[in-house]
Image 1 (spheres, rainbow, N blue to C red):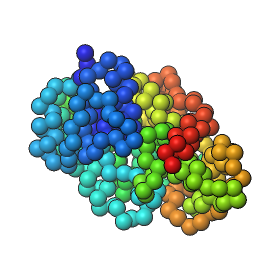
Image 2 (cartoon, rainbow, N blue to C red):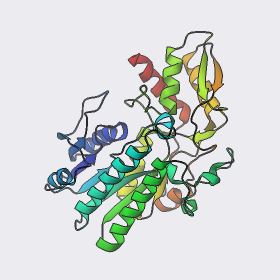
Image 3 (tube, rainbow, N blue to C red):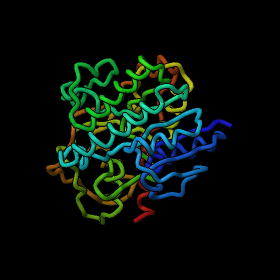
Image 4 (cartoon, one colour):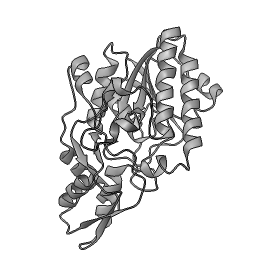
Length: 316
């Protein structure tokens, strides 16, 4: 039986990943500051711990693991990342966790997965909302649009440096807006799909759904099941370079909102208001994942949003 450690196992992606690993027959230990908010954990053991403390990380790693999945980070949606109010915590907390993990694993043969982000891509490559450039080799010269993106890029280079100098066996994925049920949908850290689903679910006929910015900014959104499939394929590969895991189905935020309104069957409109929006355009470039892993996501956005909307509606 393989043994896996999921850091950030109380979070949205981490909780789903624990379930997938258990279904594959793994023995799974999860670590986080909190238990999953909307679910009971499937982990064989769940450790409440602060991964910013190196002594804590070293204690956890006294057990042998075949695979480690590092998803722990201080993060949230646009309302958390782009206001500037959380920059120092984002930089310090996430970087400290990754430094602790890299240092603890540097002489280990354990296979490590690190969840990076599409937020690492240069701001100037994402000005044209209809033609963003998020090819993996476009990451440099670096100019992420947020401190969150800078920290993710630093940690990518941290892990690849440890791989080069110490033989760290690492795989790195740049996630593009992962969504699905069992994630936060209220409180300030929610991302666009969950926030829109909540607003629509709470609305009554005749209401206007508030959307930050012009609504013409573009994104692609990846349903959680395909994210987990991408992680699995990457971990079983010999691909050592950072790679996008995301959908190539790009929509504007207004289009996403209209999609959810249609799913709800309600008579609603959109009201665009000032608010943090990030870059004008972002969409996963899947040429590299297709050529290296012989696979790319293809789950329709509307199907995933229907599942998410129905789940959020059930929680209200």
